[in-house]
Length: 430
Image 1 (tube, rainbow, N blue to C red):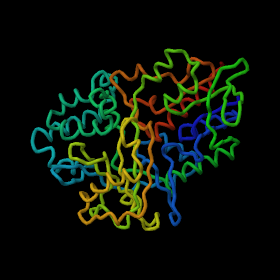
Image 2: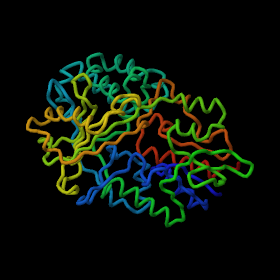
Image 3: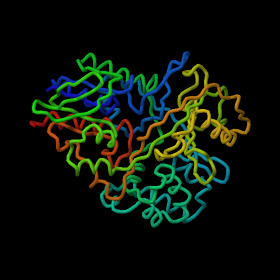
């Protein structure tokens, strides 16, 4: 079979890996001039590691990603440092990434609130009945079982930060999956995620996969001889095609899909992301904290601050201290229109709230990254809205972050759905 894959993220490359080993002739099309998708990174002179454009890490439970790396023989290149996540309360930050730390967090008060928080967390860790949970919103379920005080302090800020205007419509199954899968130990790859992606692409090339970087596919149509892909390089025919882009991009590429399938694609909601990366000459968090969860009502102009070099040492970045400030936002938000300098001017004053010694001359360099598709929004009953991987057009398949529900987006589930799509392609006779 001659098979095309659109998108060279980890999902598309995982599918290519399985398909080429099964005897398919695989060509991967990627509009960017690099592989890795949303997990891609960049390097500056003097750095021996890359920095991810949109902060990434693995959890110890990310079995699909870790199993693939083990298959490739790179298990010794996976590191699991122990960074520290903190929560905001009354102008201060408190560690919040273990049972002991949670028990000491003053934001939950004492007595019944803390007990309800613990019982809800335990229940969600133990239950596997997410199907019942997707019938109710996280807002309603958490208010009822965790209690209003705990919900307002803990879960409501998380939902607002992630989903903005949709926060009251998000399925409780998403919250279940988030708590079920995440661990306090966070993983990375020696050299950064970009090195992992580049090594994976090189392995695919060695196996015979063609990877065409900087080539945008403009349309996919079903012809009598197969699927016709039209790109900047011309037209080419394939027996099978797997699209791993966003639902909206899939709808643009394949307007001949039946209307009900197109409506399903276009009906899926998502949030974009805006991330400003800063190289500082001094450490921002003197306590060594990695991830700061920031409630919107506290007046911060971003959702999270992540000091990457409290996870990966600054020696890998020429001694620079790397800090992310970022947010999930609707694509119409003004942060998608403001220039890098305008965003920097808006964000910089808030950094003194993390370290009163901070001044703007600590900033050595900044980079701005934006994407309109970063976080799918799973509404109540989302499992009924997920477009099938095998589309109604013979030979055409679709695998995206919006279909990994109830799990959250990330490289682990990108690999899982990519490999699941590859199995379907291999077993198909149409």
